[in-house]
Length: 110
Length: 110
DNA sequence: AAACAATATCGTAATATTGCAATATAAAAA
DNA sequence: TTTTTATATTGCAATATTACGATATTGTTT
Image (cartoon, rainbow over all chains, first blue to last red; front, top):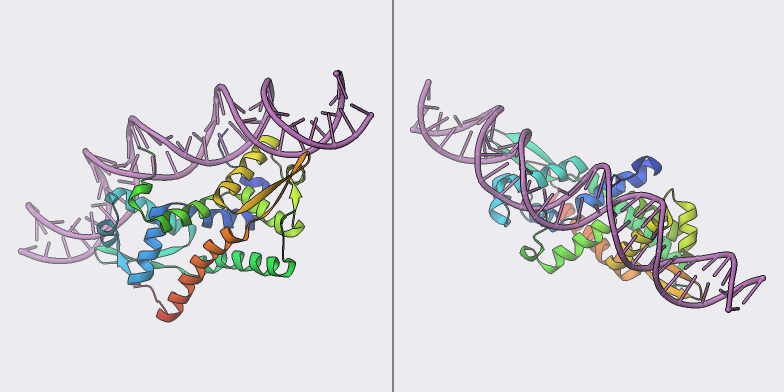
């Protein structure tokens, strides 16, 4: 096998997993941090920033975009990327949800 | 190729990626949600809860543990698992950091 | 139009992940 | 001590990811 059994989990679980997976690579964390710093930039800026080739960066951007964490606007010759807030809200909500639960329970393992 | 170039990124970026990657599978999201609900449980409980075999669940638990998101205490015959708060704090901090930045910038893409 | 610039896609090799049957390990119960 | 229970590990097949050279695409300049 090797294929994830997505159909056995809830939509919410699958959506959260897609978001988390998209952030599960240091290059994509670095891209998010860079976008946060510069607010907006084109692909070429990221290629200059990261130790990766243009096709590899393009692929990482595509994954972040598919997951809904960034968005890109065509701007003439280039494409302007920036963070997509709704995607971030979704995964941020997951951690807040967990934190609230943990605070109520004051959990001490076993 | 195929191996992530971890040495080209900062420790912080690699750590965040490891945490996010560990959550990048619906089964592992489901395990975290289940642990949150029941506070503490043994591996067998999760095997009954999820549509996955015992070895597969065991492997997912191992990954969550390696990433620092859960911890397990040996309890006689079985192992008692629960959420490990410090790991969660780390990744939660990342999203809070992003949110604070975005609020300041009121970013409108491009 | 031709050359250039920015980005995406294709093809492919290397590696990693997913899932499970079979088996190992270790403690508890009989 | 044998059996049962709970979990981990091994081995392997199927699939996914990572990375990049080569190439395609599309808009801009000259």
